[in-house]
Amino acid sequence: MKLLPTPEQASALEATLRACNQAAAYVSAVAFANDLKDRNGLQKEVYTDLKTAFGLSAQPAVRTVKKVVDAYATLRANLQAGNLGPPASKRHGRAVSAPIVFRPEAAQPFDDRCLSWQYDARTVSIWTVDGRMKGIRFACSPDQLKTLVTYRRGESDLVCRKGKWFLVATCDFPDPEPYQPVDWIGVDRGIVNLATTCDGANYQGRGLSRYRRWQARKRAELQARQTRSATRRLSRRAQKEKRHATQVNHRISKEIVSVAQRTGRGIAVEELGGIRDRVRLRRDQRGTLSSWPFHQLGQHLAYKARKAGVPFLEVDAAYTSQRCPRCGHTERANRPDRDRFRCCRCGLAGPADVVAGVNVRDRARSAWVFVTAPALSPSQLLGAGWMRPVTVLS
Image (tube, rainbow, N blue to C red; front, side):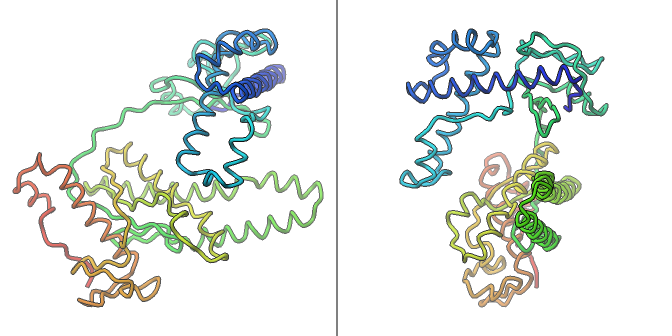
């Protein structure tokens, strides 16, 4: 929700963010020096200092400690998952050699004790270092307001972004019960083609790649000028490419989920976790893969399917682009180039990405039968189409 504070209210909000983040940096230093990562022990250590030295009230002090504890929990999870490299790497060493730092305008969580919503008046009342600030207006559409009133739960984060103020409210939507799918839509994700379904629908990534190359050239030109005007323009262009890719992924995922919902089918994608660690690339390919939005597309498909009650599965991605869906023959020679597939045994031929989508669909069929077979009779399985022969491209 976008806040519309007066200059006096904005000044109080800015002072509050800075005080909370200074306190968070102090708590982080204490936690790092004393190896205190549990909430109760850390709170006993710093609670008095937060109230006296930083001017925080009781509940904001508690939220600040929880914010620091959550930050260290996230760091620990990233280290265990290997997201910061092996223990001997420089990145891993930098992450564990110093306390976590909080920016002066980093987001600050507020719970219902220090933040209240007046929905009819479209205002909020929030704690600040200058006292309780009431009557701060917020802007939203009628649909957003209805969602806020019905589903808002838990904390809200106060965020300042380029001089504009926002409250990020958490809304808990009840998920509809997924229906029993009559079949599956297999989705193959890629770089040249962002998504290709087993039905033959193809969402090309040529436009997105061209847009990214154009953005890279513009950034290079502005960086080469090294002027104040160029720096300001670079700042205005920040995140523009990311927002464009997000919009493309939203559009693709929305279309796929709507087709699945209309036809009563589920959605199946390849499980691509850790692909950047598994795949070895040439130097000129690394930038393309690192900016490839396949993970975000999978996330959009998952949450839109869950919101619509569409079954969603991730299946094993091994050899989906090299396996023949008709005879099962798997060989690298089945895919002579990026666009074409031709089985060396039975001669099945077609677009390579569509064949990969068919393989994803077939694996989803098998996986779903394995999960639901005890609850279904053979006649139900046959009626649902799970036991019928697979017919694909010829």
